[in-house]
Image (cartoon, rainbow, N blue to C red; front, side, top):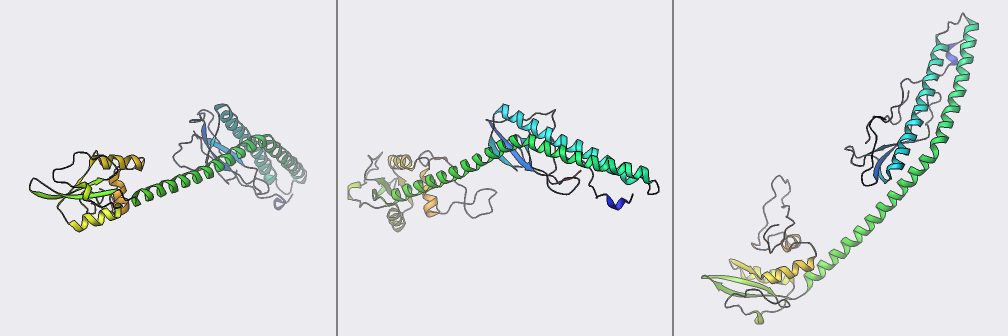
Length: 307
């Protein structure tokens, strides 16, 4: 028998999950990776297998899907059984290939017998892998549906987040355009200062000499221009005005809002220093308020590998 009649085969085996370290969902979520392998005999790709890992796996590949503990165990077990069948059928085929390839050409009877065994093993290999894929298909379909639902939820979440961000941006833009701000020049401890307040909010601790009723109504940008034009050494913000503005900002501190709009500190009207460790020229504002002054998978696998 000529060895040229035998196809070339890859060697090795598919790696699968370690049954000694079971995967458990986290908050009914697992991460799944889709893998296919080249079949040993013809080089075609096998139907895919999904390997299941905990959702917090460090490499971050795959898709996080909803999965109960019971489904997780079924998915893992089905994947292991599928790949185990591929490995066993592949090992049998590899052994038959080696036997057929090792028979000397001058022993025709032994060669024909070995080649017949090879062909029978090849047919059995095809039947076993096909049956294994059919057995795994329902679980494969479940996982595909879970992936589709996860992707649909991700799209919906992204749309909702974008909508909320747009609503927040619009709300804050409207707030910045409202002309309820006012200011008044005062003198405290011999130093000239500007007292900033809101006309629509009961004022808190008005300094002596302030004349709020004489101040025009301006929006936030008009307020900043007025304060800059006054060029006074001190700016005193009314606490009640800041507190009410932060309430209307719904979670954003007044200092952060001012920095986002004007790229400067609202108390000093200067650009804040860069945050420590930052390569950009802008600081990383804290999340505090202006009024407060603060701001699984346990075994390896090979995708696309062969025996």
